[in-house]
Image: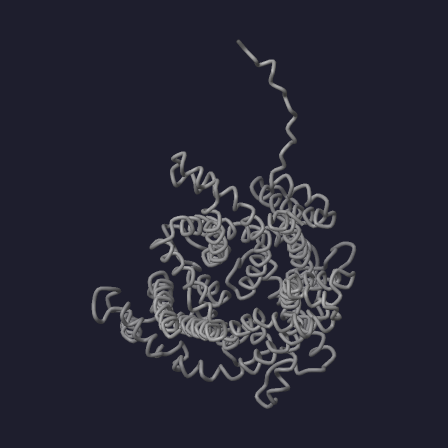
Amino acid sequence: MSDSHNIIRTPLPRGRSLWSDGLRRLCRRKFAMVCFAVVLIYFSLAGFIYLAELFDWQVGPTLWNEEVGASYETPSSENLLGTDIFGQSVLRKTLYGAKVSITVALCASFISIAIGVPLGAIAGYFRGFIDEIIVWIYSTLSSVPYILLIMAFAVVLRDKTIFGYKLTGITAVYLAIGLTSWVGICRLIRGEVIKHKGRDYVLAAMSYGCSERRIIFKHLMPNVFHIIIIDFSLRFVAFIHAEVILSFLGLGEVDRPSWGAMINDARIELSRGVWWQMAAATVAIFLISLALNIFGDALRDSLDPKLRIQ
Amino acid sequence: MTAYIIRRLLYTIPIVFGVLLLTFVLFTLIGGDISLEIAGKGATQETIDDIRREYGLNKPLFLAWDSQFINHFKSALTFDFGRSRDRELIIDKIKRGVGPSLALTVPMFFCVVIISVSLALVVAFVRGSVWDTLAVFICVAGMSIPYLSFILFGQYFLAYKWGIFPVFFSPDLTMAQYVALPVLIGIVAGLGGNLRFYRTVMLDEMRSDYVRTAFAKGLNTRRVLFKHVLKNAMIPIITRVVLAIPFLFLGSLLLERFFGIPGLGHMMIEAIGSRDYFVINAMTYISAILFVLFNLITDICYSLVDPRISLE
């Protein structure tokens, strides 16, 4: 006897996940979406320069070292942002600088996430001795002033050969930033994992007999992942500014244009009234920082479940 | 209470040990033997050996009473960091640089705190209005301008072009003269981030129950803000201020470089230029010690004020 015909198919209301909910709310903020578009433009510019260098396309930014005019030419319709001391186009150099900055910020983010997130999750989940060791490591790192720590790493790592690979230019920069900035995310993830570990869904997963690795990576990680995204949309700005300062101090890329190096050039040029190189680099940094800051704030407001009820 | 303070004191030992371990790994293990660099290109083997002997680089790394590892700890704990590249004792150099650095950072820091806390009160007063949104936007915009641009444009316009301030440090200027412009630039550059932080602190406090009670009693906004919110908001504000004090001793790398102020930041820049690991090592260690010390003081003060803490 079958009573399948008795089952009434009630239409279930479609569940809204945290992500779809957050995305919906994010899309409603028009200004944040404009900022996101600006960030995307910077990223695609950096990606385009990579492709152009890979396939040897002769386009603007990759021809930055071509002489387009006399030394220190003022901005005109021909050279939109003027020229620098070698007669190279400032516009091309500024565009090329996006590649350096974005590469450094992206690589540094990946390194610090790769170190900070697993360490934080392990410390928060297992507690005990391993937690104490990890807390000790990050308390040590955070008791040295941030900029001093980055500089110390950058100075020591520069031009070192590690595992037969020479750390030149920006490699040392993003290693230095990445190896020192995982503390913040590690602390956040640890705190969040401690909080989540007492929740019912973790208990349920434990009682199924899930392995610890599965609980951490399949159950806990998706629930704390939004923190990583929010944290890094805001931290990205700090990385870009750190790269500028390191390049300025002569610890960054030497034979290619970067925004920090352009500002360093401007130090001498400004007294001669040459302001365009300085202005170009400032505006380039300002735009991406502003866009990232506003977008990061909007992202936090939309994804943070604590604000969801309001 | 006493037990808490003792426990807290003991807890600083592993942190200091950790910092020393970090500097050892960084400057001795990864940094490696820099005697060749110090000696220069055309140096004879004898000179290189002499340099190695002076810096103790000829000794074994670990596993001996006279190893580099033990000596690293010894020199740090006795504050004897040896000599820098220009043959001056590093500790003397640091003592000389602290004065100008503090002259720059102390007025800058306290002006930033006072101005941004007062502005934050004003912003909290008009919260939710167009002015509030505008203030936040200006803060974010100010945070997005690179620090270097503030310095360069400030120096160019205010000192070089309009001649209101001296462009560069020179020994015959009074301290107030050469510090004025860098302090001004530092205040403007630091205002955005700080104002935004203190605004968040104030608004968080505005959501508490006691504020609702105060409003329900019929107090006006000004009275609630100054009498109730400000007092309670002082706790996170003071924490932030006390924890920032050790960083004041470091000076400001970029401001000191641009204005040629002979402080610790300037010394660091020179050390980076000449790859003088010993100076950077000393500065890293000293700043970490200061940070640990001030952290300790904050925690002990907390436990004095709030008896719940020592129970943890």
